Length: 548
Image 1 (spheres, rainbow, N blue to C red):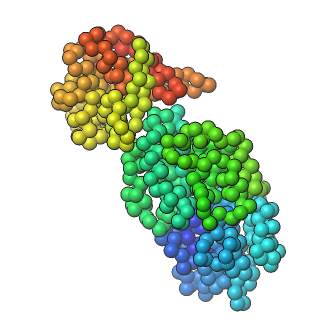
Image 2 (cartoon, rainbow, N blue to C red):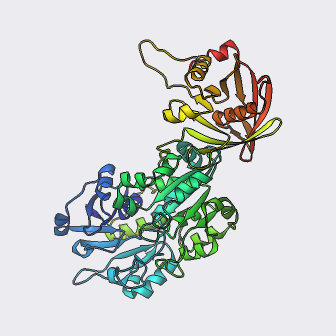
Image 3 (tube, rainbow, N blue to C red):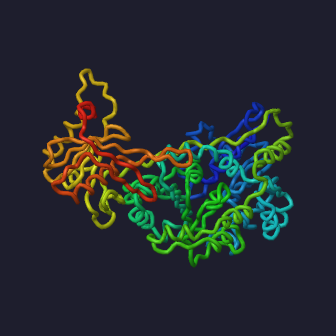
């Protein structure tokens, strides 16, 4: 029987330990306990995470009185020397890229500081420094030769989870509600040089600049910032971007799912970017300038020196296009070795220290979970429209984030009444199923006519009946019309545009033809680089009578 203690000083250290734990899974000879190492201002979330995974926590005083067969930690800081047993130290990030001012030895990379690596007093030295790349052993030897004598390259267990989950990319994008849009992830580390400290308005600026139907934003914030601020305070600070539909990734596991789903990355000098680069070669730009924390010669410095720098938010698309393929993967190779082997190598080392023969079964990285979608979805849009003879280019931005467009399009029942009263186009999506003893619902035509009478400023009202069918009523026209939106077929995929965007195209097209019959007609709705065929015809009784 063996007892293994997972000693975590912060939430981010705990997450690293949880990623490594499958190396000991399936063995009933091992008991796993958790303890919170005191002394960190970023420990607020750690206990709740242990509770969430169902771990057994022991108080620090009790932990110091007992002896363990292994003590696993992902940070050398704190009073780890008080814990008795073979110590194994895992890194808590991708490489060693930052120094922390006023903490430990000057100019030492966090995680390689000799002041923390060699225990004081009679405490035994760390039995194993489990590192991710041979260059890290070289750097460790320069900082602490005695510590390097006990170092081995085992790879990165967190990266193993990312690589094992790559085939779930489509599922992650579906869960996020990304669809055919491009997902741009922003990553912010912690501290005064982080993206959110230096450019706190960047997420909202990007949300205002990028068309809603072409781009989605997601933000990954370092767990230390989550712990320092709390989820509520963080969400309040980011409210403009969240209101525009940005996803705020949860700090445990979900951040990595979002990285897999992303098409491009905006990063500061935090090492999360290296996981993105190791997973796939997609565009990266940075916002780090004139800092003192980045370690010269580190993988992150190599990356930031070679990828484009983002200036104003409105240049983001051209800066992403300036990325040179292969740049990110080169930096990732400098941070990670033993790809695909990390859990097996770590398992071998841990069982040798435990004095046990590993179980016969193989260990596999645990797949990353589905991320949660955006907590808020914009329901009112300033719509810019370029109308030609039979084509309309549509660019929708969340209302209030920029200059007004051709018209205001508002989803009734999802946006506030102030927006509904100001809408030129008002539309409604179907209600969820009702379980009332006597159900009551609007017909598509009934609601559209009701909306025109209820909202005098509204020029067009429509019920979205299905992804390819809307029923439209136009002020001054007694008839109701069926609007059919055809999907595109490209590269084996079926791509559908939001029918509300097609309704905006019809609304804008109609405004250039006062007095002319609306239907029958065919026009093209262009969103980004995709064109969708939209046909209009008088609505049949069946179409007009659809329940919504």
